Length: 265
Image 1 (cartoon, one colour):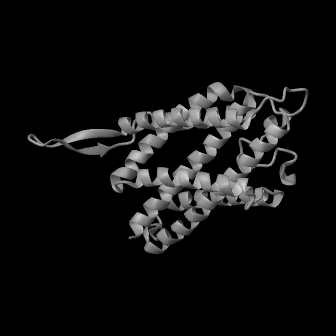
Image 2 (cartoon, helix red, strand yellow):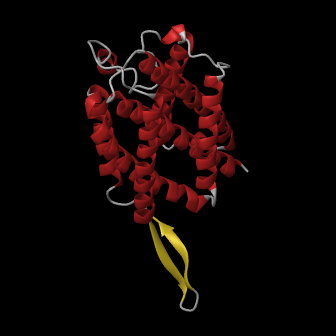
Image 3 (cartoon, helix red, strand yellow):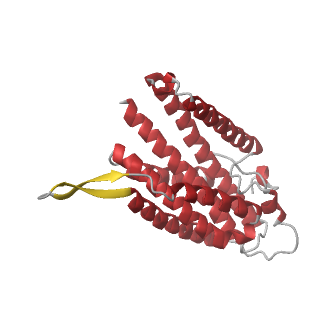
């Protein structure tokens, strides 16, 4: 296994970097965690996420009759009333899973439904502004995932301590930048609506996509190290949950990138 992750606690994903996750390796746990089991559980979470997304999309869109003869030819998109409740609930559930990985199986499903509901509503709003943008973001997310997996398997990109530090530092920098822009938006600063700012936004979002892809590489390394280290079977659910979190981040970032590009044209 790559020496950079011999301690197993290093990952760009906050879920994988918690002390609670590291503590699970202590003791005489059975060596039963497998890559196949983790992959199956990740797929299960993603299917639940898609189901929640369909629910959120349906809740956000309302058919509108364009004329009496033509039937329903258009739709309006509004953020559903339960959007913010689901958002804060997903944040709370995510924190609980991070500090208590043993509950990842049940709470991971709850998180997937809540987050899927929010993603569905957001995706409907983006798609109403730019037709086809959601399909492009989904396909790009799948593509980036498999490219990151290929780069990891072939060891073209190696998950070292320096890489993990760079990803974590980059994530912190992005968070501060987004907070700064949010504060500026409160004061309705005109520069936020300029072409120059949209260009800067595209560059920053591309960097965020790269960070998300590198975080996937670190997640793969965490899973491999866990399997080789004899992690308990239930940790497959936690690993699957962590992968789902990174994939969600990647999808949202790509969706925003395509939206910025579309507005800049």
